[in-house]
Image (cartoon, rainbow, N blue to C red; front, top):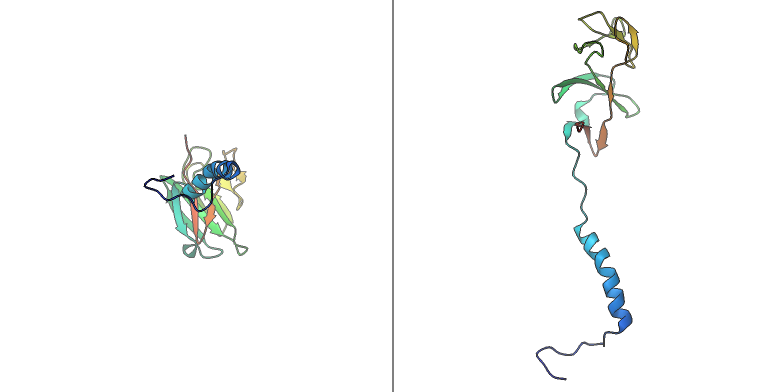
Length: 140
């Protein structure tokens, strides 16, 4: 058998051909595999969150408070009152979030303590990735 290509070093058997054909999709999938992109959202370096200090930031147009606990957990809470949507603020003296619009009061955990609100402050689900915290934007 003559031609432009030299003969293979070993003949390709049916078993070898079937094995290569079966492995091809897996090899292609592994070659294309990449880390998923980070979710779209607000990214905050963990170094910007001192332990035990409440940090206010804007997440899109929403005021949010981040609180990093000594055990490493980070609580993310919307600062919009669930009554009419005014921005609440933490009061150290009263150990509560206070709403300036209708005297709503919320506990440190966001639970309603008094006033017209009937629902607790909304919590967000932060994602910890390496040395950053990501607050994903909600879809829909």
